[in-house]
Image (cartoon, rainbow, N blue to C red; front, side, top):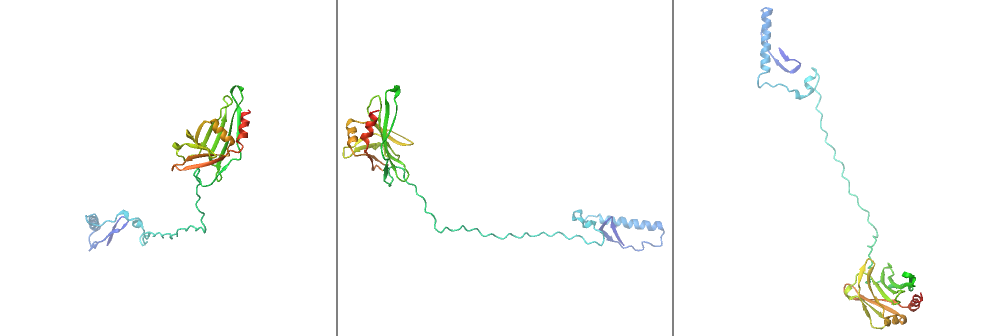
Length: 250
């Protein structure tokens, strides 16, 4: 005889019934069956008896004769194909690196003179004439950077000329600047200040120097680089006498 508890088909035991239904009466037979059922339950609940756990899933609730659902198999992910690294195209003829030209007086390119002197005048205070100045510059051909500018100022009040010399950066300042007219003896000037436009030296023009500039052909400005080597920049004096006379007549 096979006995099961409730709907749990696996919690069953085979029990041999010997003469369960004997010649005894119905009451006796009922007591016999009840005793066997109580013994079966005691065996099922006894320590050490394996009882199926509910965590085993829906196989507990399958109907008799129905096979339990197969467990889902884990799929092994297929690795993605490796990509080959992209190769940058090679340039047939790479362009050479661009070099920066020097901006100081040490540039190898010969300087270029401005065509002529430039005159500028403005009214003096109180209406007593004009304050005038004339200037000429030397620049580099490749980048138009200033190498030298010479400015002669003639104030209306004193009529005594003064000279302003502008040089580039990158100089040895203690050496100052020397001005030489043709083959005459150079005259030194002190580089007094520098700003974003360059370095400057200024001072009055003596009568001897003014006469030399009117009669001379070339004015040379000599200064030193940071290696204390002399650099000479030539400025033509062509047209100086004519333009200076125009300033005096104002």
